[in-house]
Image (cartoon, rainbow, N blue to C red; front, top):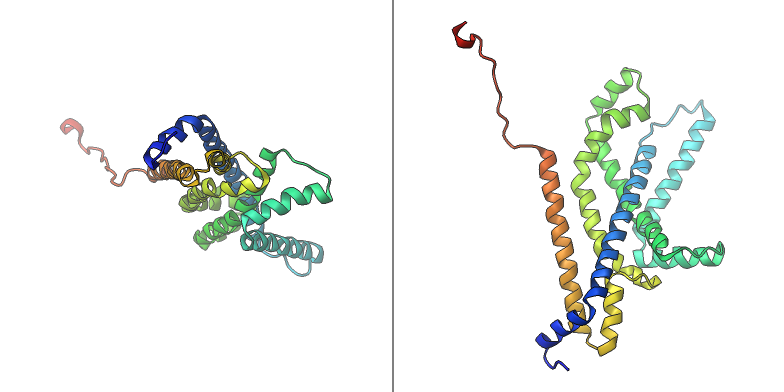
Length: 250
C-alpha cells in the first residue's frame, strides 16, 4: 500500500479515474443543461417584467400583469435568497411528499439548477435590456411594433450580446455548484470523490484530485468562453477600402 501523499495520488487516480471522469462529465452535463434552461427561464421572466403597465382603465390586463410581475419578483427573491443545497432538498423531497412525484435524479437536477440559474439570469437579462438605449424602444414603438416585436427584433440581440460574459460566468459557477447535488445522491464529481475517499479513508488525497479536476474544467471553460466572446466582438481594427475614382486613369 502507498505510504506518502505523492504515492497515494497516482494510486487513487489509477483506481478511480473512470468513476472520477464519469462524475466530471455528469457535472459538466448538468451545468450545461441547467444553464441553458436557466437562460430561457431568465429571458422570459425579464421580458415579462419589462412589459409596460397598461392603462388603469383596462383593469383586467392591468391587475393580471401586476399579479404576474409580483409572482416573478417573489420567485427571484426566493431562489436568490436561499442556498442551492436547501433548494435541492426542498424541491426533490417536497415533490415526493406533497405530489407523490419521484423525479429521476437527472431530471430533478436540471429542474433544481435551472430554477436557481433562472432567477439570476432574470436579473442579468433585465439589466441587459435596460442598458439598451431607450431611444431604440421609442423608435420601434413609433413604427407600430408591439412589445414582443421590439424585444425580439431590436432589444434582445443587443442585450444578449451585452450580458454574454455574465451568462458564461453563470455556466462556470454552475460547474462548481452542481457539487451540492450530492445531497440527493446525484453521482457528480464531488459525490464520486466522497465515495472514493471513504474506501481508504484518504480524504485529503482524493479531494486534492477532485479540486484539480474542478480547476481544469473551470479554467478550460473560461478560456473557451473568452475566445467565443472575442470572436463575437470581431476584429479590433477594420480596414476601409475605398473605390478608386479613376481606375487605371480612366
